Amino acid sequence: MSFPTRRLRRLRAKPSLRRLARETRLSLSDFILPLFIRHGHETRDINSMPGHKQWCLADLPTEINALYALGIQQVLLFGIPEHKDELGSDSYHEQGIIQQAIRLIKEHQPSMLVIADVCFCEYTSHGHCGVVNDKCGQLDVDNDETLLLLQKQALSFAQAGADIIAPSGNMDGMVGAIRAVLDEKGFVHTPILSYSAKYASSFYGPFREAAEGAPKFGDRKTYQMDPANGNEALKETLLDVEEGADMLMVKPALAYLDVIYRIKEAFPEFPLVAYQVSGEFSMIKAAAEKGWIDEKKVALESLIAIKRAGADIIVSYFTKQIAAWLKEEGEK
Ligand code: PBG
Image 1 (cartoon, rainbow, N blue to C red):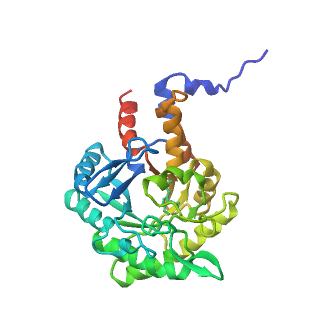
Image 2: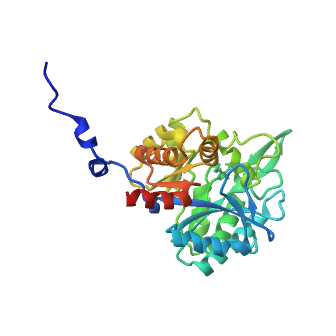
Image 3: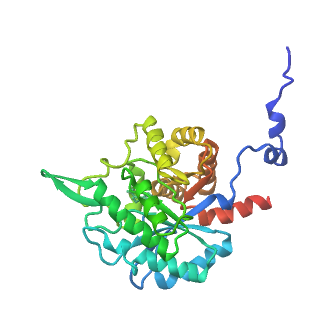
């Protein structure tokens, strides 16, 4: 009988050794918190996303100050306007809901990093991510007309004070179009975080309630990627890199760890963001509410897996809880 000399259990023997040998760590500075901002004077709960709200402007400064006090310094904004129309015009109006929100946040907490999601589904009456045209009886989003409006929206958010512009509508050429207008108008230092590999995912379900942006007809499969495709994510990402994207994204996260891994391998020089989307969040919440899983443990395990796969930064609805959880872990 020969006993092993190489014992992997050695470095697992106690918490202090495990901590030292750990390969991946989460830090609050890795996280971006999505926030929903609504018109009117009433902050509302989002049923499908426990703990999250649609914030009205009047309540926003208090929440922003509370987040900042917790150490959260990056937020991603989504707007719910009072009026939706065919072109989503609230999104490029100087008094649009997001423009007002950005100015308010900057007034109260200038060092809060504000990332503006640039898309049309929350602002259009039909709920699609761009201009809908009728092509021989076939309704579809017109790519190039949408690019012109995306330029207006991105510029308007930059003018309101957004620190990062994050186009999420998956139109071909969106990064190039936005870079061109930002540069032309003097915003040469405003970075673009492109939702470069974004899938037509059913994991966005709860977000549709949160942002009130569900498509009124059809789906998003003519512009978002087919979940069956991995190589195509490299092609999408390459184009965005060539068009001038500063940061890249894979969305959703947990069901797409292979994509995260491949994008990080192919483009190691670009910060890679993974978006742990609404469905990923709500599934953990719901199972934990039933007592079937441990919310904190499952959330942290999912997030460490996303980072281990290659993400540098994570957009997560758990960000506020992570602030508390990481503190607890650090004190252990
Ligand atoms: C806008 C947008 C969506 C999400 C982020 N930006 C909805 C969609 O593409 O249908 C989803 C985020 C989430 O589920 O948390 N296009």
